[in-house]
Image (cartoon, rainbow, N blue to C red; front, side):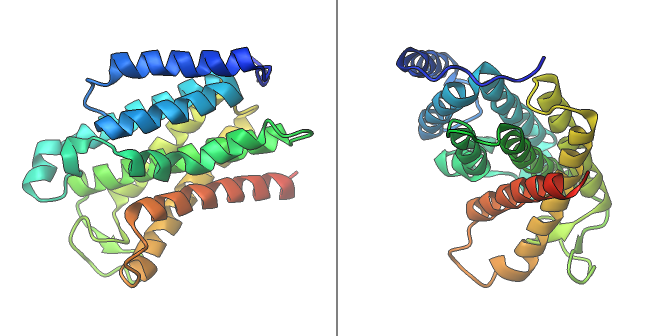
Length: 249
């Protein structure tokens, strides 16, 4: 189904706010987010429904569900090894915006007069494909990666080291990026199989760049938190996708 932006009216935005408030009230007992995380997810959901409609909103809900499911895989073993996500895998506000700030900004830009909507949707899609790729690579690599090496030197390091990669984790990143791209295509946010391929590859590339940032910069600067690095990764993915779409035939 071709993608069309919803009509921007006050009623539409009030509906977006009301629906998300109701859905968050019903869903907040699910072990996905912290209480504050649910509030921020409601703000994000209202923004996405208001700008992109139900399909943009559903895309991010599916990302959240898939990311949470992957985080729970082998959770007990990762917890025993000290590699599990804190708070039982529940995401807080910092995780919500670290993953979605780039996508939310691009969604808002689609409402500008004469906005290049297809390019913005491509960047939006790439940002979430990259984030799911990162989650899949990290969680699968920590649990099932046989050999973990530092991306800059290929020196063997313990699982969970910043900037570490494994073959299993890298393949999981590719699968996660491709799965998210296919979902976005099914929802109409991506327009063609070529766009799906581009977003899949960009998602993997941005994940490897994030590992490079983790290996070279994150340990040097205390302010460079995981959430900020996540935000940089999604921004890199969006810019790469838009730039390549402009350069390639």
